[in-house]
Length: 290
Picture 1 (cartoon, helix red, strand yellow):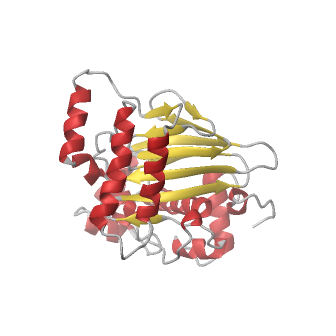
Picture 2 (cartoon, one colour):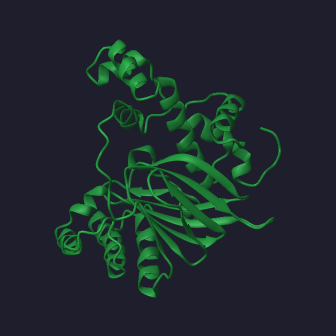
C-alpha cells in the first residue's frame, strides 16, 4: 500500500474508512468476514498492525513467518512483498487496525538520532517483527494517531505528524525501529509508482514507456527480463488496491470496481478471483456468486 494509491475520503466514520495525510501516514481499520490467505502483497511503507480479532500471520519473501494473536502487534518494514494469512473461527470476523508511516517521518532528526544509537549494535533487523504485548502508552498513542489522520481542518498537519511520531517513539521503547528495505531499482517498481493513485486510467504501454523515458520495445524487454509484463503489473496494482478498499471501507463492490478501472463489476470479479483465489464478496463474508 502506498500513500498515493489511497484517496482521502470525505466521510467521518473513522472505523470503516481509509484516512491519510500526505507526508504523515495512513490509518485503516480492516474487517474480514472469513479467514483468507493473501499472497504476494506489496508493502511500500513501514506499518504497525494491531490485531483485535483472529490470528494474523505474515510471511516475508525473505525470512520466517511471524504470527500475532489478539492484543498483539506486528511491525513490517517498507519496500517488501509478503504473504498474509488471516484466520478466524467459523462464524467470526477478522479485525485489525493499521498505521502506515510516511518515509518522511523516518528522517525526523530526533527519531533518526535514536535509530543511530540502536544501529550501533550491528544486529540485522527482520522484515517482520512481533510485539507480544502492546503497552498502554503505545495503545493510547496508536489511537490518537489514527484519529489525527482522519479529515479534520481544525487539526494542523504538524500536530498530526507529532502524534504519529509519538507512536514511532513508543515502538523504540520496545526496541522496534521502523525500517525500509533498500529501494528496488527495477522497472517493475517504477511502473507501479507511476500508475499508483491513477488506477482508473488507461495505461497503454506506449504511455508508460514515454513517462519512463524509454522506447516501448525497451520497456517490454526489461519487464520480460524481470519476469513481469505491463498487463500483469497493472492488474496486480488494481487488485491490491481493490482488496484494501474491500477490507477497510464500506464502499459497494461496484464502486470499488470503477475506482480501480473496471466499468463492469463482473469482469472485475473475475480478475479479482484470478489474482487472489476468492471472490470480492468473500472478503466481507458473503458467499454469493459475483
